[in-house]
Amino acid sequence: MSLRLPAAFAAAALALAAATAVLAQAPGDGLPDGPGKDLLLRACTSCHDLSPVTGTPRTPQGWERVIGSMMNNGAELTSDEQAQVQAYLVKNYGVKPDPGPPAPPTTADPKAPSAR
Image 1: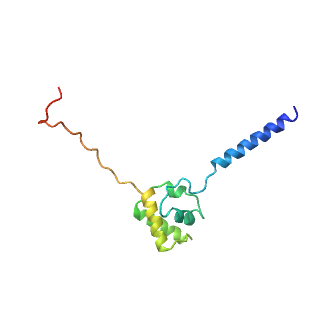
Image 2: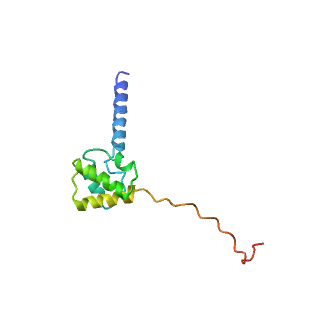
Image 3: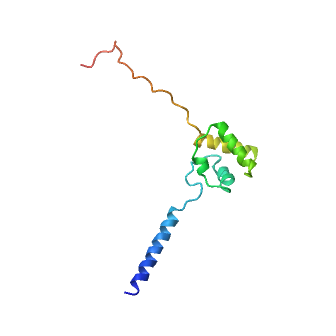
């Protein structure tokens, strides 16, 4: 019986370690693929995780301000890279346009024969 308890603890520890390894993801695993993703990961995740990026949709101007602010705080992007990151963020995390009110239901054409 003295060997069973340590073996059970060892098995539990091994299972916990395996589950942790499976749950651990690289910083960009949840981001959509596309031009600018790698630049975003390089420039943004050196200082913080991606929750500020993915958590708040912004307008193109809003993303431009955020990227400019991050560059003022040390993010390293050329102007071309900045444009690529902004396009990526607008496409994937931009404010979605308001679709407007739903279209009114269509009425049956009075000239069409009835389905009786």
